[in-house]
Image (cartoon, rainbow, N blue to C red; front, side, top):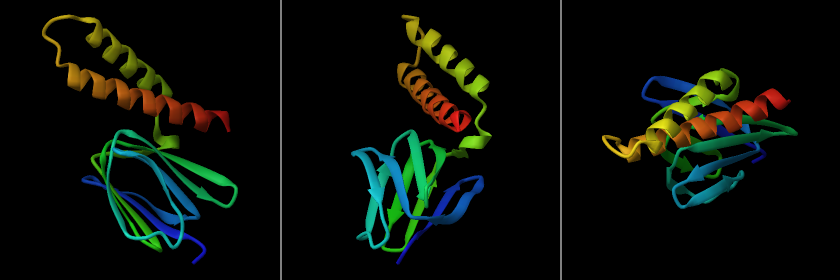
Length: 135
């Protein structure tokens, strides 16, 4: 086995289907990587970055929580939402981060858990967008 089949799906449909030599994703218990021949694994995912490496190239994706199922020849990501790096708007992510930071500064009538999640999503999208633009 030289590569893995990677599929990223959301309730809105398939985001990506292709081959990868290695997949790295943010799990709730920490970041983990999957190589061909991996033992079967189920894991919960947190908001973060997924990196699919193929040859010398890396593809970046934003993943908004969900589950990963990995095996010797396939990685299935079932996420609440996911985006390819090239589909992320840096300007929108920067604006979302600013809105979340402003909400967190308020002391009353704020759902802090939602505001922190929004901040985490925006920060991950910014990191991915900046890496994609840097290429």
